[in-house]
Length: 297
Image (cartoon, rainbow, N blue to C red; front, side, top):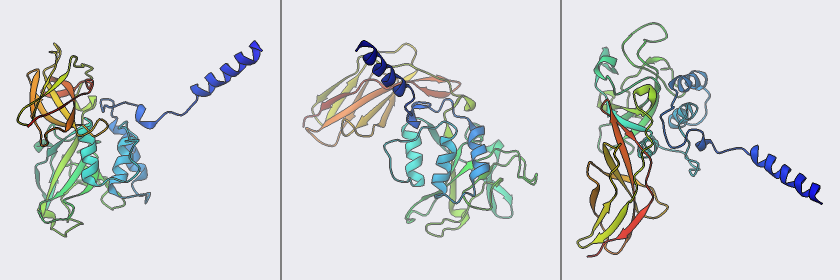
């Protein structure tokens, strides 16, 4: 009997060891180990696969390089939704890029004009300046660096890989809006710049303790926490429900923040994340435990 029990336990243990793990657990909630070379290799090998759209292509590129997938999402992203996912989860920051004429009336991204804002493996976001455009953030491509095109032209200008288009390893430039038809000169370009070691960021594991939330009058909630000696400052996040999406609502140097909310009597949920500045870059730590409170009128 003992041998049978031991054999059963051994079988269960071995089975658990070889269970597949979710993709999101590979790097955890951080872009610190993002590998731009892997993203660009994937782009070079798969840009013309004919799978999905520009957002799906770029997403697969960066996931192959270490950016976690949202395991709770079962439907596709728009360009704006994927940008928001990367920023809200602390994987990237967004910079507006300066563009210049590199040929005729084509505007591209000159490396020297955008130092510290864009690097190989970053995502280029194309945004229409027409306020009536139905989908202003309409296109994504993957930055391939500034070594020039495949033909050796235009060194110093950022090239890119795009989905199913004959612009791969060509200069990344303003293009006509595919949603409202606005001309290429009515487009702005942005970098979704990853917070990786390659881009100068550092791993920071600081975590805030003693977080409290207290509702007061006039639709206000006071959030406070203990000082963390390693932190330069703190980011306060709020969610509308316990399992909702936490959005950064403030960045402060103090250990308290007063939030003015919309609804009296509604419970709001909060987390605090410390950050540490190194070479002018904000390196985010870990989320605190969750706290909640209701405001009064």
